Image 1 (cartoon, rainbow, N blue to C red):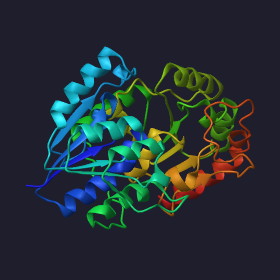
Image 2: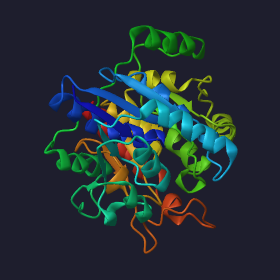
Image 3: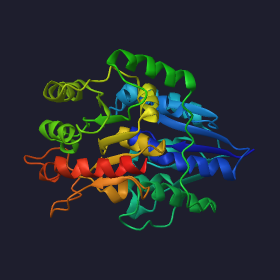
Image 4: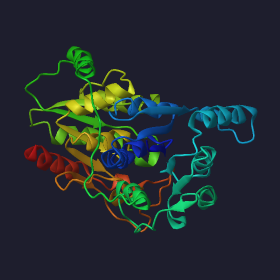
Length: 341
C-alpha cells in the first residue's frame, strides 16, 4: 500500500488551499494511506475532510528554537510520522516544515523548487523538488505543481469538505435569536483580519450597509478575536445590524455554507467560502488577489493597484490600499454577485 505524508502546518487559509492537492492525491492513489501533519488549530478543518486516513497534530506553542519543549515535541511527532517507505510532501516551504519532512525518514521527500520556497534553506531537507512555478500564479496551482514530481497533473480544483447536517442545524439554532428570516438572503460581513493592513475601516463597512439598505438582506457581522469583535461592535452601533455569536472554527464553516454572499478581506473566512462554492466579494489590499483571491470567474474582487501593492506588510501607517476601496464600489459588486446567485 502506498503511504503519503502531507506537511502543511498552517495557516488556516493555506490549509484550505492545500485541499485540492489532497483531493488529487486521493483520486490518483485511491488505496494509499494518507496522513496530514498540521498545527493544533488546523485539525478542526481537517476533521471535515473525508478520505483523510490520519491527522497528526503539532503544538505550535512549543516552537521555541533550542528549547527542551521543542525537542520533546519533535521526538513525539517524529515517532508518529516515521516511515521509510512513504512519500512526504512539504506544502509549506519553511525550515520547520522541511525539518519535519526530514524527520519522517521518508524515502521520497518532496518540496518546492528553491525559487518558490519561502525560506530557501528548507531545500536541504528534500531529495526531490518540484519544477519551478510561474511567479504570480494562484497558490492552489502552486500546490498542485508540487504533485508533478509524482507525475500527477490536475487542472480542476476540488475541495473535499463535508459539513455535517447536525453542525449546520447547530448554527441555525444559534442564529434564530437574532431574528434571521429564512426568505431573506444571508449576507455575512467578515469584518476582521489577523493583520491590521487587511482590515477595511469601520465607517466603510457602515456605509456599505447604508448603500445596500434598500435590498431585502439579512446582514450578519462575523468576528473571531476580541479585536475583531470590537470592530464588529462599532459597526453594529452605527448600523444596527447584529453581531454573530461566538462560533467554533467548524461552526464558522457551517455558517459560511449557509451564506448567500460573503464579503471579506483576505482571511480564512474568504478562503473557506470559496472552497465551499459560496458567492464572495473579496477586499484586497497588501496581498495579491491573483495569488490568494477567488478563482471562480463569477466572484468579485475589489483591489486598487498602487506602487506599494503586494507588499505583504502586517502594519502600515496609512493602509491606502484598503481605504481606497470605496463602499459604493463594494456595494455595486455585491449587487452584481447577488444577481448571479
